[in-house]
Length: 322
Image (cartoon, rainbow, N blue to C red; front, side, top):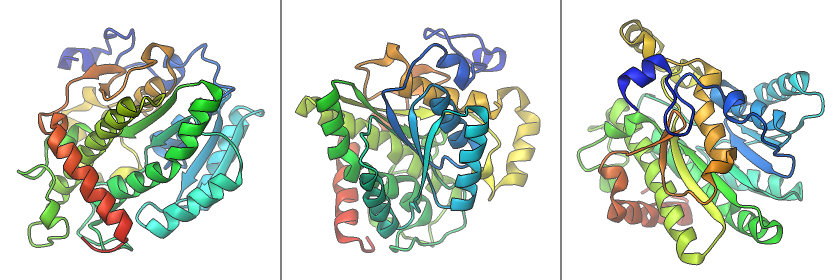
């Protein structure tokens, strides 16, 4: 998509563009036979994603750290659609213990799982370590979702096999994946405070989101599993994710006003990739404004993707510092 398309909202090959909203890209879709988990579904584009999926009659599980906010989000969705099916479960992605507890709680619901939307994240935060001793942005944006996805895979595989319905995993990445450390992923320096850059660390975690989806896709194709995995850039949206950089973002927004989206537009690509029938069987791709885009060379590096997969498996298996 060109800058002109971003500014004007002109539709791309999919028929949608930067001005399309989540409701518009899912119009006419019946998701009543689907169950979806949306991490970070209590606010921002996560809440809009959960709302629109519920509007299309999917059973939505909001996974959130702040349960008070999650319950408020549930009531907002029910106000919008009285017959919506919504559950809320606690999930703190910077804690492997919390991720495992969430999966136990979800399994106790005894429901299928068709769609997993790895939406939650932190952005540009000062250097700090997670509960498990891992740099916070990498831990929350990637490792937490990596573990969550791994623990839910059997449920998704069984659902796909028993129902014949394609499963879909959507990782929210960012155009910021282009701005990372020189080596892409600093495997040997994940927790190096002296070389820490909040912007590059964020870019590193967003690069990891794409590589994770690509490697998942490769595994599914090798195994013949009826699940797709794709990544998306939602666009520039002022959401609670930017709490560490509000002033910077406001300054940038003054000079890039026409490139910014509102929240319904920001959730459109996620909802498109999660629900639209045109993407049946499409996997290992990166989407912007509901259209396929080519990510950076690092994001297409299959060796880097495998190395990240192995590194991440080692971290979640040990549950300890890298």
